[in-house]
Amino acid sequence: VTATLIDGRAMAARLRTSLRCRVDVLARRGIVPHLAFVMLGDSGPARVYASRIEKLAAPLGIQVSRRELPGDVRFSMLEREVGALNADSAVDGILVQMPLPEHLVETHLSSIIEQRKDVDGITIQNAGRLYLGLPGHPPSTAAAILHILTEGNVDIAGRHAVVVGRSTIVGHPIAELLLNRDATVTITHRQTRDLEAATRLADILVVAAGVPGLITPRMISPGVVIIDAGITVSDSGVVGDVDVACWDLASLVTPVPGGVGPVTNAVLLRGVVESAEHRSE
Ligand code: ADP
Image 1 (cartoon, helix red, strand yellow):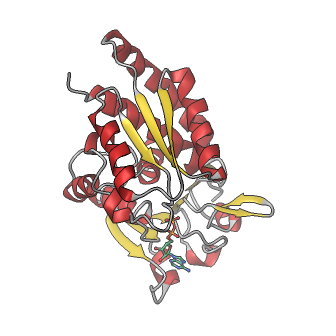
Image 2 (cartoon, helix red, strand yellow):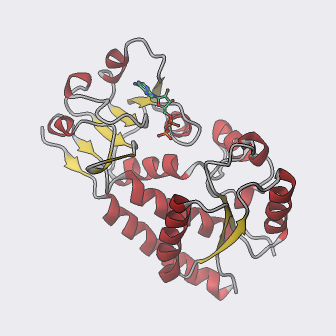
């Protein structure tokens, strides 16, 4: 079998096109979807990310703004800034730059963003909704993986999905999303004794470990669907967790770069539009 490669950039472009229409409908109600970034200190990667999202959002008619706070900001001040954004009914999404500076605690942040505006799904409210199978904002990368599987017409119900990695932003939430869609889910992680035994049983293999080359051909079964959410910046550019030799065995795979990444950015914007659609006036 030679796998079908998912074109994440094309899929993202299609998703953004579908958002245009929704933004037009909102415009007739006088609503402009608005995403607010909260930047902490002078982080190069965070600026690059914010600029990328701005560039994607502008042609869709989604407004993006930035608040800049010092890197050594006290939690109370961050709380005040987020509180002001919560109170501003014209704001639909709030993204606080991650990772947080060391003196700030993620669990504190995860309770101060209003649920509707938590478009990256970091709050306890959205995590709870995910766990209960209620609508909400799941973390964008996990939502993007589900979008790819859906668009790729991959059957999920009753299939064995194996997730490698249990991070709160990718592994754990995608496992919940798959479970909600009736997959049989195995979550593996650093302490898993026999990773290979688990991955071999996968109909759908989602890899989010951040370990280049972790998944090799001997670890998979022919025909498996592989979603590679690993992102490691190496000398030769961005690489995923899956050895490209696996591509010959799989039925469907996402490349890195050009797979999950671009879809994640589009899914984030979808979350902002969705939130704007739920504004209560
Ligand atoms: P990401 O942000 O891509 O999800 P994190 O660094 O937050 O990555 O989490 C990495 C996850 O991958 C952890 O849950 C960890 O247990 C898992 N992991 C890392 N190395 C391995 C490995 N060799 N085998 C299985 N799981 C691994």
